[in-house]
Image (cartoon, rainbow, N blue to C red; front, side):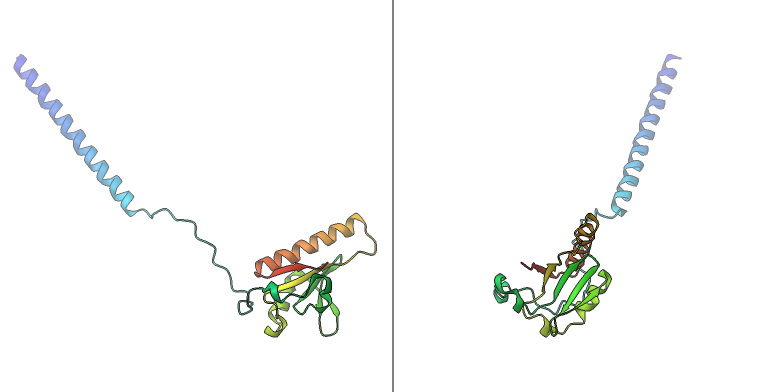
Amino acid sequence: MEKNVVRDLVRNIGRDIVRDIVQLTVTLMLLGALLGCSKPPQTPTAETPQPTGLESIPAPDPSKYPPLSNMAHWQNPYFVVREDGIGFVDLSNREIHLLKPEEIPAELVSLPSSAWPYGRVVLVAQAVPNNPTQQTKADLRKNRALLLGTLKELDVQFREAP
């Protein structure tokens, strides 16, 4: 009788081992299939720049800029940051046209390529407020930030007016 008990015990242990091996094999196969079907990790890609309409304008060429002491001869687009908005200087008559920040891209794109003799760079000046209160200073800072942010989005460099 002891032989039968030992034989049954060995048979049960053998079945348990075979069952465990089969389960492990199936589990590993399923895991392998899942890993094989999963997407590889995405590497961060550089953000594709959106077309701005200014791509045909060449990069800025500082060697063409007038000296800082003589910015009156600046020939590229020219902005004046004001407390009440952003002024775009019409170089033909020196009139300032007040723009909303969202109008800046269209204004720059509408210019002919001849308006960019120094490349894709603009002059930025800041108006001196008539009444320099904390609020007017804050408005100037806000308008300046909006202008510079828009220029960055358009890949347009800027030069500070003295």
